[in-house]
Length: 241
Image 1 (cartoon, rainbow, N blue to C red):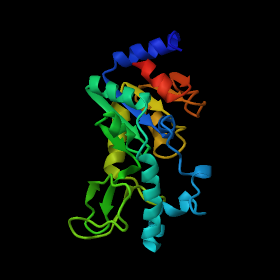
Image 2: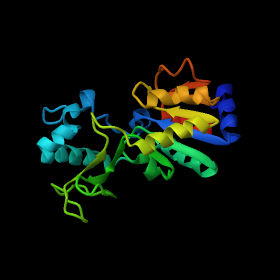
Image 3: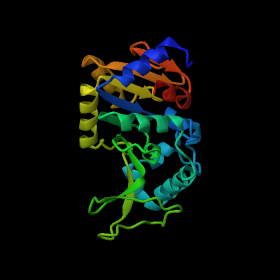
Image 4: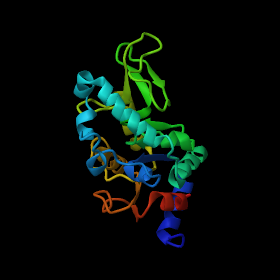
């Protein structure tokens, strides 16, 4: 792979880019051993993840929802960023105009040293008060149930975009702006089928960006990307630097 001329060309393009946007999904975290928490991995106490990650479920039984998130946080607490996360942090450090857009909520980009991160679906290590709306970091494992706000004693909830909820419009606007103005969009570990990720690649292409894709398998992006590399993110992304 290191002698692949396409790898060398992509590396040269990245080295000379004025503006880079990156979109990451579950595939980059899978290389660190992060489970999906959906599908076959999503069954917990005979309850599906899709039935717990909703505002209705939290209103009905906040303790049950928090127990599930506490279990998830406990699993994630020992997981470390991999070489792909670290490579993207290195890319950010050398790039003046850089945005990392992620569909993941595991916080691994932050742990790897990335700072300009746009989290489309929130962060499992942040909590939000249902009363005063204050968002704070919380890495307690295990978590006190039910957690309360230090400011107003209101009930805290995970700072996650649940099924049926709208994305943070500021994060979405910043993500669209990033792909509209980038020279290169690097897509890592996502099939790009879910909105809003599905619109980011076409937006970048429409504005003249070079699109690079790294994914374990071919995706709907592959035929339209300028560079498409199949394999583990932890193996391929470092080669691009």
